Length: 403
Image (cartoon, rainbow, N blue to C red; front, side, top):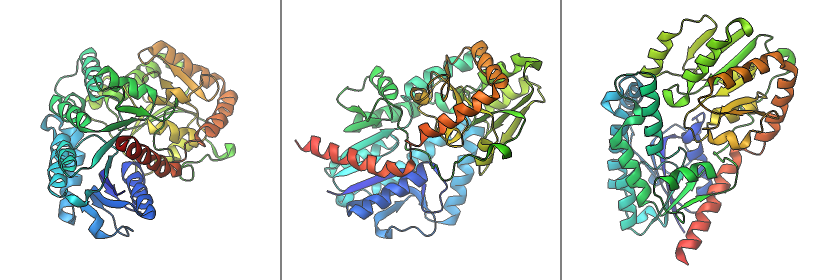
């Protein structure tokens, strides 16, 4: 058996995390097993330990990398240009042109983005396996559209690109098997028409690729700030629900003395929302290269998403010994036991969110104990287990489809 990967990112040993690091680890594992055929990726970093003949990189020059980096940053600033979809379509065309008889028996893709590539792989007899890291894109479109109407936001959003949603739906139809991170995600895909026997899940808990518990780790209590800090880390858009977190924080007034830290780049919608609140206790940190120190000094982490498969930031906070308050629209909510290692609440219940934040403020000692339990929880989500999990999926699919 031979296996090819399609990775929507740069890969290599110098990639810090996310899809690029996971894709590289997958490729190394398949190479070690002697089954790696091709790796289709956005580009590669230096020091990569995979033969060049096995790599199909859409971006091979420093000029191309610079242009792509600029366009990627412009995605959120100019959503009307639909740059995200255009970059993905360009990569899809490039990958498809380079699919040939060496593609192997299985094409594994962590994101359902490349219909031309999948069609071409099928022509050469490869079976396509997709991993879903988001809720169904149609669900995301509907949730974000509804929320933007509630907030009276004009213009467009990256999640309301109807053409991109249709492309992903086509890609899902072309896949032979779709692996969802959890039953929560699986239900989303079944709701929008995928057949039950196509969509699989590994267990009853949310199963993102995991968290690097070496990189993300607690600091001693003595080193932790005395100030009460509520933290959120993401690429901040309406879908992340930060508008509800700001409303909840604002409603607390002087009942809570502390800071709300919002870490990550903001899109146009969030810049509009930011302008509606003038609160000195809210710090918009922006994009950071290394979020670990923010996690380590936080009192609690809040993920108020209105539609989210993970998010992985919840696992990262828990790995740093910080309990999380998450909405019921987060897939990771299935790993949170309210009052034990965090809290779960209804995503649009601002009053309840404010109540939970205030409880954490008034019960710091208990929150620290919850943080210890949160750390114990994520020890079962080691990122090092991910390649083995994917390999087990591939073997299972190969066996089932050949029966």
